Every structure is written in structure tokens, then in C-alpha cells.
Image 1: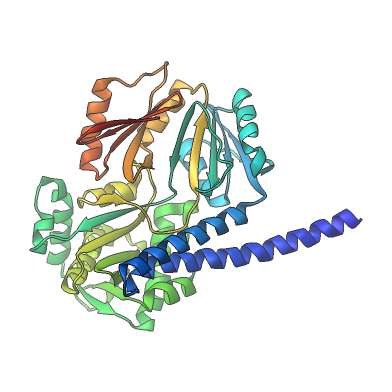
Image 2 (image 1 turned 180 degrees about the vertical axis):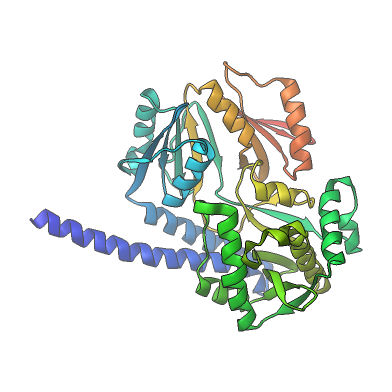
Length: 412
């Protein structure tokens, strides 16, 4: 009886503590974004480092002392995921998209026991373990094959002068054709800081667009969060039709000569608008607006860190380069021992993106069963260079070989 009461009190206290920690993480995010407003570079650096440190500690405390673990058993392989519900949905989609499986919750694992438990799982019937942890966690497990990815990356454009040269070249031919098609159809744009326009954007453009694009993986940012955190700092670049009615829009704001694309939307996710090139012209008009207001860099927003992701492919066609997302987040560590050839091929095909010493590299797994050849490396290097990445990281048994597009280095 006493144990039950104490446990309930603990749960209530943990819920309240996690709420406070979430607010601290959110505040740390804001400081990271706004540190440029401070008058001196040294003050900016101190603010960034302090916010990062406090945010990372808060993330670690929020995870402590236990995280939920789930088993996903499919026809070809079995995976254990340790972390959040949203992360579980993404992993299920990436590795079991063609199967109807129900994740099995296998308990809450103490962080300090995670390394031993990971080795136990891998020694039994589990092919891959994925852990979502704070980057400063002292309990990040390791295995023979290990690599880490962030949950999100940025893709950014350096805006040229004149701006129109951004649309030149064969690489961007498809986007250029869509923009021209939309302009011929009479689409133009206007900037708005009207609450009426924001309400219309949020409920009739952004929400349907995100649900249509991501399905059950859709993360809908709360109204107040978008309004207070972003809209009041910037505004909406609205695409309008011949009747002067908004049919698409992008929530943007400019900070430190960088324009951040926060969220976008298409009116009721209408297929006819997509067919008229509205998605491409939506971004182009936001770029035009940013350029006219002094921006030198256009941040295309957060993207999932794998090269086969649809958003990643679309943004890299603009010539965007991959950059670190200035947020507080947990990292996902992938661990395996004797990797199935089919699972190795699946991971290599997805093209996960890892950050190593400030360089963003596509992960390429090499095992005794399927070793990576020099031809494989040369072919992949050519592809990742066009996609805005710095190079490759070839992951083999306890070894990471970082191969950059213009030089080569080895890290253990």
C-alpha cells in the first residue's frame, strides 16, 4: 500500500518535472536562435554554449531514469527501439512500411543498464537496436557496428546576386519549369502579418498539407506555438491566384541575414494546385521576398536525415547544402553485431546522414558479408556531393572511415 502511494507520488512529480524541463528546453532553443541579437560576439558565444549546455542537461534529466523499449518483429528482421513514441513511428515506417505489425512494449529500461541490455538483445533474436538519447548521455551503448544520426537536419541555400542565377542549370530544370508554369497561370504573392491570414493559413493550408504529406507520421505544431514563437517575429508569404485569394503560403522570419522557412502549406492540399507547380513557386516567392529584405541565406527548414526522404530530395534539387539544426535534441544511435545482408542493403539504400566533426556524411555499412568496394565509394561520393553533403562515413567493425568529397581521413 505504502509502495503504491509512493509510486503514484513519484509519477506525479516526474510528470511535473518533465513539464518544467520541456519549458527549459524550449527556452534554450529560443536563446540559440536569438543569440545573434546580443551586441558582442563573445556574449553571443557564451549565450549559445550556456543554452546548449542547459538544454542538453534538461533533455538528459527528462529521460532519466528509464526509457520505454519496443520490439518490432517483421518478416525479414527484428528491431528494438528505445525512445519516444514519435521516434517509434518513424522507425516502423522506415523498416516495416510494407508490413502490418504492432510494436510490442517490452518494458522501461534503466539508462545505466542500457549497454548491457543492448548486448543481450543483439545476442538473442534482435538484428538491430536503435536508441534515442541525449548527446551528452554517459550511457550511450556501443556495438561492433554503430553509427549515430540527428533527428533533423537543415538544408540551406546561399542566395546569389543576381537572384535569378539560382534557377539556372540542368539540376534545377524541373523546378524552373514548375515556377514558370505557375507564373503563367497568374500566381503572384504578397506578405502578410494579419491574424486573419494566419488563421486561414494554419487551418486551411498548413494542417491539411502536413497531414497529406506525412499521414500518421504528421507532427502538427500547435497554433499558439506557431503564433507566438514565429509569426509575431516574421509573417506569411502568401501565394495568391488571379482572384487575389491565397492558395498557398510559407511562414518565414529573417534573423541575422538568414531567412528561416518555418512551415508551409497548400490550400486543402488540393492536387490541382500541385499540378500547377504551386509547391515550387511557394518556395521561390519566399526566396524572392527574403532576398528583397536583405537575406543572404535561405534556410529551407528541418528535414529527416536520410537521403531517400522526399523533402530532402526536393530541397537538394535547389542546390541546398546540409547544415546542423540549431535546436536541442536527442540523437539516434544504431547498433548491430552480425547484420543480415538484407538489412544492410536496406540501411545503405535509405542513406542515413551522420554528423562527424562538423561534417555531414552519408552512412555506408561494410561487413564481411557485403564489403564496400572502391567502386561503391566513388559512386556514392559523386552522388552525395551533388546532394549537398560533405562525404561518406564507411562503418565497419568498430571503425569509421570518413571519406570527404575533396580529401580523405580515417577516424577510429
